[in-house]
Amino acid sequence: MSSSKVEKEPKGAQGSEGTKESEGAQRSEQAQLAKGATRSDWALRSGGTARSAWAHRHLSALLVGLLLIVFALALFIGRYPKPGFLSPAALVSDPLARQIVLNSRLPRMLGAVLLGLVLGGAGASLQAVFGNPLVDAGFLGVSQGAAFGAAVALVLGLRAYSLIAVLAFGMAVLALALSLWLAERFRYGGQILRLILAGLAVSAFFSSLLAMMKYVADPLSQLPDIVFWTMGSMVPMGWKRLESSAPIALAALAVLYAMRWRVNLLSLDDTVSHSLGIRPGVERKIVSVAAAAGVGVMTAVCGVVGWVGLVVPQIVRAIDGPDGRSVLPRSMLGGAIFVLVSDTLARSLFSGEIPLGIVTSLFGALSFAILLTMRKVELAR
Image (cartoon, rainbow, N blue to C red; front, side, top):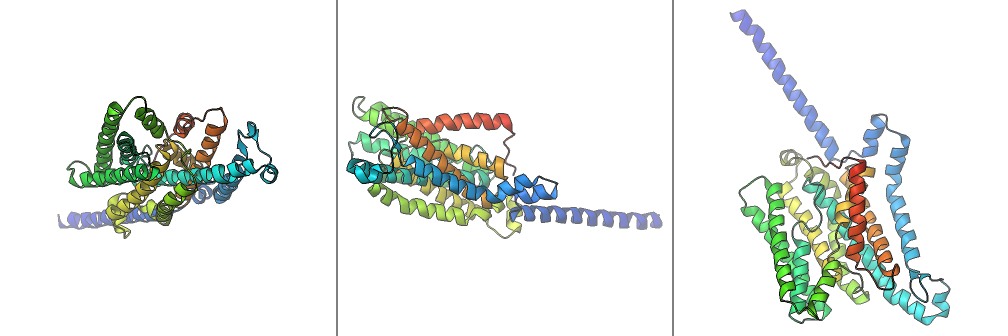
């Protein structure tokens, strides 16, 4: 009896030690992933091709080069003096062409780049920290709140851009605050699930208020303005509006870029994140506030532009892998290219300009469908 007992105890101790060792190995592997082991590193370790490693290392440079090329071409594409490409020599010989390029197209294109940077970066960071590939910048109700604020200004007859922008941005901030407040008071699910549910509730609430504004608006003068604004457009963008919106948008981008490596930690389980020395609740709110502030200020100027923050990060992850250190800045660059190309097509395809939101939704939905048919989109928690 005693001998059998003595024999069993070392086995139990050995099993306990084995369990501890396996848990330690798993914890070490998760920490290594959290520190940002890139997709190319894992590909090379598992016999991946050199082509994928080269693409990973040079993808940022390729995106920057592509953005510069698209920007240079789009600057001379338009409908003056005839549809097509404007010769750069016309800037010297034609004062009207110089006026159009420098005071109309240039600030508009810079605004499109800034909008794409914000939407791409916000989408990538929110999808990672909330562990949901279907999350975009407006899931906390920010876009719906901004749309409602602009609709209220138009119904009240406030035609000044500054008043519309202030109300739109104020309602976007209010929507974010309501989402965070509700998430703290929900008693169902974990922290991430509560915030997602709160965002859905706030989004539906402000969408209903927006529908009410459309119903009470004058169908001849006010309703067309509300509908056009909710479709999104870069027409209002000029040097003054770019100067007023750029500081907040750039500050939000700086915060998201500085937090890019923390996104890897926030994408892990909260218990693992705590063990690695961060406070996931606080840092998740920092990322959410920065993303919402950038999206809110750009939505206040350009209206609601959808699908950019949803599709672009998924395309980047399909090419580059899940490492937040590279996915977030590359999603910013990809979003800038996406919005710039869409805006160029919106203003140059037809004699009348197409709202930017229609073009981004069209290409975004097609890209999303193609992406889902080619690979399994998955963001593990």
